[in-house]
Image (cartoon, rainbow over all chains, first blue to last red; front, side, top):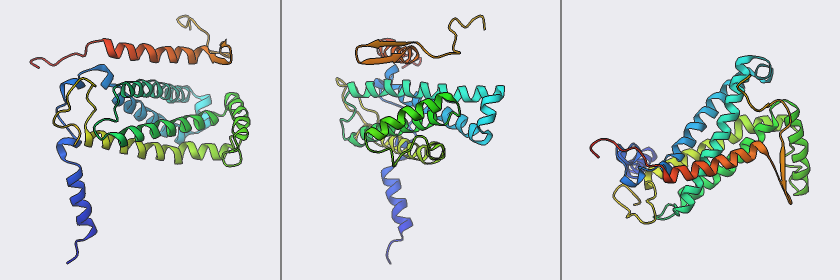
Length: 205
Length: 51
């Protein structure tokens, strides 16, 4: 009897994602450094971004411009994005200077790079839908820039409907999928050791 | 807001270095990244007792 696809997926999942790798209760000693904290800080900021973003989505622009709670949640959304990028850049520098693609971690590095690029697009569309003069200014300036590189007809920054759908639907989905993929790869391959440390058990396979 | 030393109700100030222009808020954020990166490398990480 041919093996069912559900059986094959189950076996492959168990083989690739061992429970002690997915949810470890111990880490190599070199992880006890602040530079290793910035990946999870980026994830924490992303959680605040998603939570405050969902709240803003349900209430709408009039609410976040006119009520005190709306101002607070709007500001929380903005500042969690600022912190998200601050933490992500420190994480990026830390990983770059320890050559984090070592030990068959190339995919982890590349998914991180794509997460960064997708986040830039998501943040940009967010600035376009603030519903104020600032977003109008950014949209008109960006329109000139995007026209000059020949992609103005595909992505029109003056089309607010396109910007809001990209920001609240497509791009968060893209960022979310890439980030989950990135975290799964980190858990599967282990965190990269410093350049002068040995790879130990629980690390790259 | 007596505690707020800098008024945030207005356009930001900009610095221009040759062809580069950067707003003061963005410059502060970039400076913060450098400071955080340096601190993350030099500040010792707290250890659990007995480890």
